[in-house]
Image (tube, rainbow, N blue to C red; front, side, top):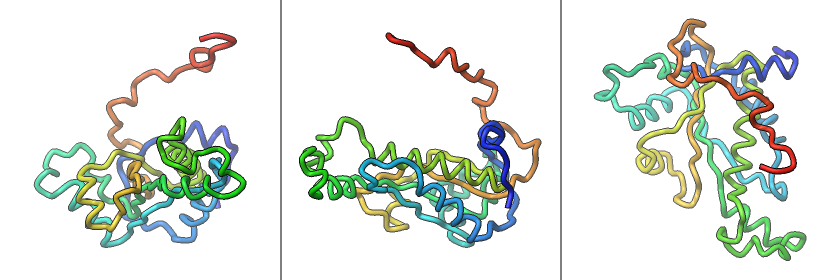
Length: 202
């Protein structure tokens, strides 16, 4: 078990694009997911889930998302080594069901997704995803959250219901090298706290 100070975990976390093929112990990943379940959730609905793929299933994922004929010249070939892939899913229907229960029915939010001022299924799944990425980092596991391609084909192949939102894909594994090629946005300056804080008025 690797445990460091929270600030160190936040500062050290990076999106990794090069993985070894070393497997992640299922118990380790489950511990990280357990921490992610503690993220904030509207009405404690917890309407998010993960479709986890390992071993041959990861090859099936890549055969759809990045077919072999498109891999020549791919900038991050070692990304395909990731031993575990998780699709982040959010279920709006879970929120309609939760907010139709007696303690929430008066809000009217159980009637339809259009009643919601913001898509809290997306928000909650995002909270959980960030918590998961930090938990993985704390345990020495690298990760990458990215926008997948070929969503309709992925839905069909892996049986993802049409009403469930697919936020993106997390690739998890042990970093192959500290000298991996960085993403194109890595050199952009990070905002300072003073630049994002507005006081009293915008």
